[in-house]
Length: 75
Image 1 (cartoon, rainbow, N blue to C red):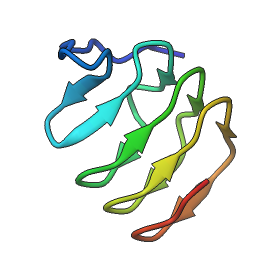
Image 2: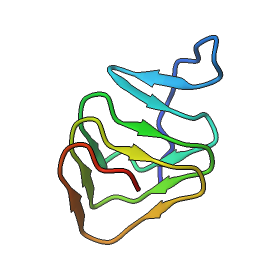
Image 3: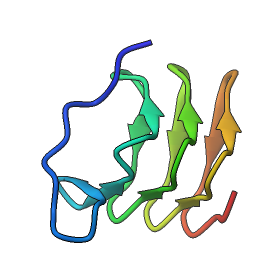
Image 4: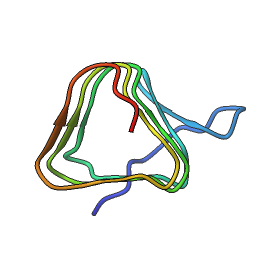
């Protein structure tokens, strides 16, 4: 699993385009995150995951398998 290469901001989160990813989160480089997606601390998102716009993945969540979620979901 590859870790996204983040750009840190003053709040400790990472911003990749319009996405906010906590620096301790692990997001596979092939995972697809919609606009304004947020990924919390220690969350893991695997390769075959697609999340729609404005999705929130909370801390310690593990999203795996062939998972697709539409817009505005909170996991």
